[in-house]
Image 1 (tube, rainbow, N blue to C red):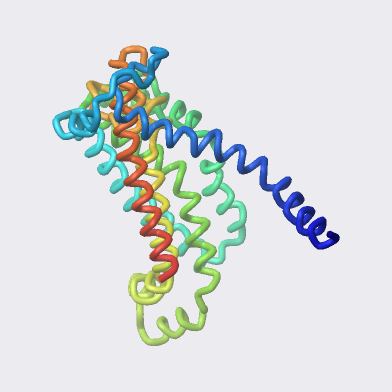
Image 2 (cartoon, rainbow, N blue to C red; image 1 turned 30 degrees about the horizontal axis):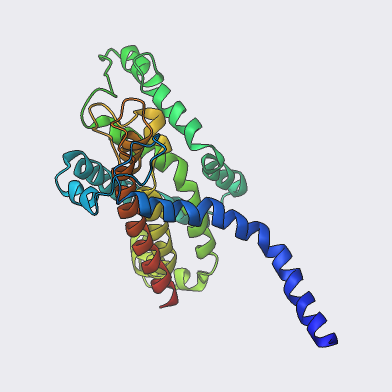
Length: 295
């Protein structure tokens, strides 16, 4: 009898501590995913009480193949991911190496300044960068000051996405920088000193010694950036709303346009189908990350 009581107590105590997180997971994570899977097979406008009245099978998934805006948003997302992954990691790696090897007197302050944008809300970052490139913003005012003509940055077909990429790099570089700088702490200075003695210059030391030693950190940063890139929404929503004419539409903003936007078509079922594609993409990348870390 005493053993049964002890076993019961050993179950109740852990369950008490786990239950808040478990309830949160069931309500806000597992249930929305299951609901999204279900409504992706139905035609629902998002506000009718007859959610499961019009079953259409896999028609929502078929429609994606013939939807030019879906492919546009997917291409924009990939374009954004490539730009952010490449530039953000190069900048962060370069800054971390310079500060690590430079032994600056105020390196702690410099590292704090680089990391500070990471702590800012993405909405605030988007508002700041949008303000910079408005007609009366700082960039155009500077162009007028030096005698050049101002430019309508958010109406051109290419520059809005470039501005979003720049804003994202400015905000996210600090995160990559911290990981790279932490990885550099394990690099033995004897290797770098020996390379200099053997006649290697600065760039050869970086490419032949430091970068190979940081390959695991580089892989982690790249995968995290790719996952974060496919989940991009707030910067696009704040800065361009997916415009002009869907030129900066990404997958998440297109899902929002289809389902919640006041000017959208209210195709909640179709938006759910696209959401499932996004979930599969992110899960595949996450699985690859876990597998590579185990390897």
